[in-house]
Length: 394
Image (cartoon, rainbow, N blue to C red; front, side, top):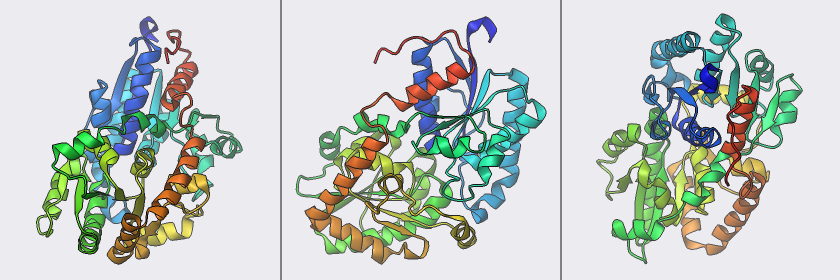
């Protein structure tokens, strides 16, 4: 640790990991009074915290066998580049954030070529939901695992992997879910209009599969419920793709950037969203929702045989109940999505029941407790023996 200033390499390969990385960076700077060096790769959130990413996050943000195949050479090149940079600069730890298909390759390469470099994995992969045997493989190259869910440490420790429960950082975004009234005024959305949020994913592959289904569903909803307005909060690297995909849409949706996303969540009446972190963000905004998701046929057939978790949405997993309606693969049809959205828009009782279940699940995730990203940052600094930690002012 040169000059007692810790050096961490943080690596995120997709937008959800980038959001976690941004919160983690802020907490690391808080706990060290800014005396820390952070390098690596990420997207918008980590860039706002001062990271100079070694490559654009769009290079690695892709999902599905068919979708990944053309990108394999580029992804493998990025794996080599990140591992080589770690070997060259010798950080006190490499923190792999989510994106297991990308970050785990870096971890395995580092463990083979430079086993003395400490590897920390931030976000336990949900192998307990499918392919549980992969926990044993993870233990071979990860020195410390930071878990978001309370039931994960016993599972991973049974495979010999040191694991610390830090809570789910997404709950820290609850305070950001404000500005709904100003958002509606800014975009001319009247008090009597129902605002439906549409979120077809943050990966190019997701948008290409889901946007046509979601657009057709919204056309049905707009025909069934009067005074509906549609808003699509989009991250930068898929915004152009979304706008191009909606050129023939009969009602011109409002497409806004990531900087307005949380205000839109606060303003929305209901949402139609892809499965992922965004569903928990919508839950924090207390926005009733419907989840729809599809992957390519081949990917779906493979995962159908591997999945053991009963739900895809985090709130449902925590609640152990289908609090939020999920429509996956063949059941993800425009008709099914539209029918459920119309129910939410026309029956307040259904919304109230969903919000009650959401509230209980958020409490279990650590809402209103110590900030999870701060707990994660402290665990990382403890692991590298950083002498520069300060007490949290919160």
